[in-house]
Image (cartoon, rainbow, N blue to C red):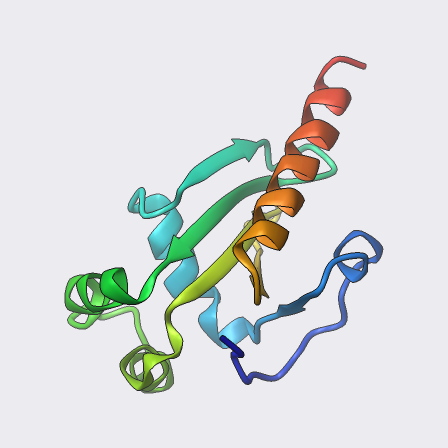
Length: 131
């Protein structure tokens, strides 16, 4: 699935993966997913080079449930609601949060690419932890 969005410049680590950074207009929604335990794995620390990060997998059958859960959230913008309702919500995402509380969302076309990136970030984080 392709998500069409405005892109932010990718950092060097993100540039190595076939992915797209989503526009910041989706950040609050994905932060809600992470804090609401809608992620499929989480690791890291905001003070580490990787930040705090999570893997979010939303398959088409789950998209309706996510929509129903978040459709009445006061924090979502009209644009976010239209995007969710348009069927573009299904996909594979990595979120990263830094120590300033900024969250960056990267969308992946393939689940395996997202999983590889998540595993790579876990290795980077655990290497940093043991230094």
